[in-house]
Length: 398
Image (cartoon, rainbow, N blue to C red; front, side, top):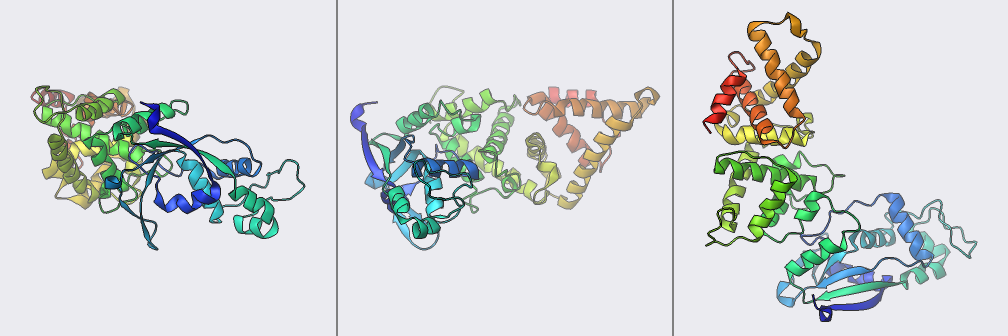
């Protein structure tokens, strides 16, 4: 990276507020918003009022041919000029404070002053302490402008920049510029309900950073592995490799491990079709979907038996609820020594299932659980005739 691509500047908070409509706070590599809680936002504004130094902000200038029209909420649209590489949470805190969305802390203290600012919102600060209010708007922020960097270099810059504040696994994957990233983000985006999978929307966790993206990419990985004839796992290493294989792909590549954009689009289509089946089964905020491990199992079960899952939505939901109750009660209440024959086989099947519940990303566990659930559904809530050996035989034929 050459230094000529980097410029440093000082921009006042007042100028930043005017610039906000031209900033893209959500480039593909960015973290999701809403991570900062109220005390942290208040502490940041406290630091600004006291004139403390705050970390630099990093913007990437967008070339004119890359500019996109951004709607700021229905009032007007602006062409985005810059991407926010780092500083999103701080910018949102500044904007939210000046739009009176939260007050100053009850513990705020202005050093060298007797002014009582406790609990004031911006409009109250302007009215009661105008000197402090306008001094805050004149606070100069350090801006580092990345000019002319490619998307790949910007992705790399973002990842390195955040090494001191660890990114979770999916956030790191989201900094890899590839088609899979684009497809995952579209399917899991909370900001675009038209592209988002309805089923994924029922699994969203607002406070879990990129958990919705992780749900989708695990489904994507299972679909690709099923096409290849063997379910390996949905562990971090496998998901990371999926992004890298697509990033380094070539449509004419002789590398059998490469994942072309065309392949990714075909897999995405199949994933969405399967998720559409599941959307007809589960309810809003469905307790059966609280575990991401359950989501992977239900997805794979529907993927391999879409004929079974696509016809009896209401009945399937009822049978799945019954299955969960059965396995928990049998595991908790059964005296193993008193069992024999079919009852013992059934008990052991549930014991194995419960053991595999702890291995949410293991391929064997996902396959066992999915096949057992499908058997239960196909036999209308019964496991009569189910044998672990039967599952093992069907597994060996895959």
